Image 1 (cartoon, rainbow, N blue to C red):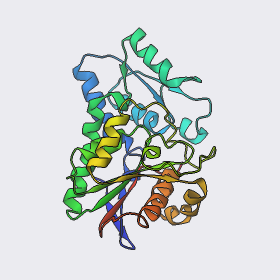
Image 2: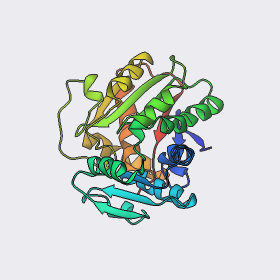
Image 3: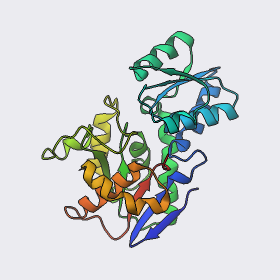
Length: 265
């Protein structure tokens, strides 16, 4: 359970308070449980940081050897928190997939692992308990797995808004074609280019009456001061900026939830 905090008529779901500091902790225990029940002896992951931090924590608890493929551009603060065999690669995703096949290691890739969505659905269950009147939720989107897991539990009358930076609006550009593309962003966890579940994510957003919100780097930076009180990640500032933008265009209701997906590192 993570707390739901109300400030200025906004509700903040504190996924940054999970054991390793991110929402990734929701999925990894379910993935590792599936790994063990499927008879695997080792695991592999590619990550921009938070997923690898979570994977190394839970793999260590289960005594599962873990190999981690990361980009050479990974945040040094995140790299320092990762335990396991670390391999830097300019193509970490494809290298992790090849490694999993060659070594028969369980691939902890959340976008292709249904057990990850089961973990993220727990967030929605808690929200419905703590805030039964929830009207909308704002979720920063990388692979979109978190959004999918949540969407499968929330009723369709709860609007789901995906929020992405203008530097990589892989999902949100399907909802907003008027944005100005950018090359810089304060976020480093929303850089996924290939999304196996892209069409399913888009359909879920539409089914819930939501939309995709594209946030400029300047807008995200302007929300940092508010987010600092939580010591939450830049992705959380981006999500808050997405809410501010959405409330001018959409009916978000009286009980909107901002998902704080990680701590600041």
